[in-house]
Amino acid sequence: MPDLPGSPFVMGNDVIDRHCKRFYELFNNYLKGKDYTTQPMSEEGYDERMAFLKALDSGIKTLPELRKIYPQAYHWNKQFEIVSFGTSEKLVFKAEETVPLDQRQQVLHRGNFFQAIYAVHAGTEGNGCAGHRMARTLHKACTAKYGKSAPSWATDMLCKTCPVCISKNTFKRNVCVDHAVMGDIIPNAKTTRMIRIDDGIV
Image (cartoon, rainbow, N blue to C red):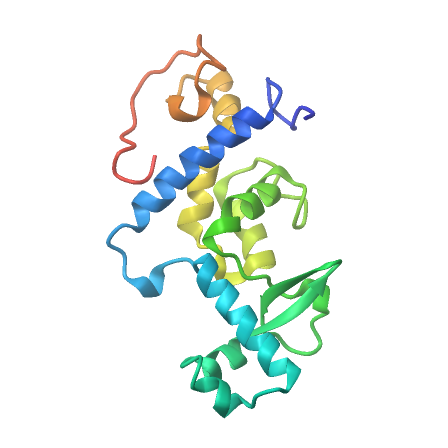
């Protein structure tokens, strides 16, 4: 895997895997005890909405009939639709008909959250402007692509656990290193303070 912009080291798969693991540790810890209405969509919930919309589009059953199977059928029908992106189908938020299909905001679920947001953060998806910049820039880019399914606390969390961003800041000045992410990649980096990471957010 090639070097990423601004990175003093090669961003190999092992580093990305470590980043993903650390992100989900904090991600899941943050969600403990949160009301279900504030929780990001589960993979099961995503698949259920997809199944409902496909059944509705097929015309085999009417919306009232489907409501007996999916109690939130009317709400889902107003909120979501399915759009094809290349060879895959994605759940997206409904928008005005004037919005091109390929620009509809896609819906994220927990299973693909890191992969999708990281791609925007690395600059390979979205508007290409987020490339390992501050969390505010990432959130703006993610909101444009994924709407409200990409909350700011999660995009901020991804930035704070990003090896590239950590290394850029560390080599510029003495800052705390999240060794759960960095491991021995920058063993000589000096730190001047410690940040509590057991409360859900670094």
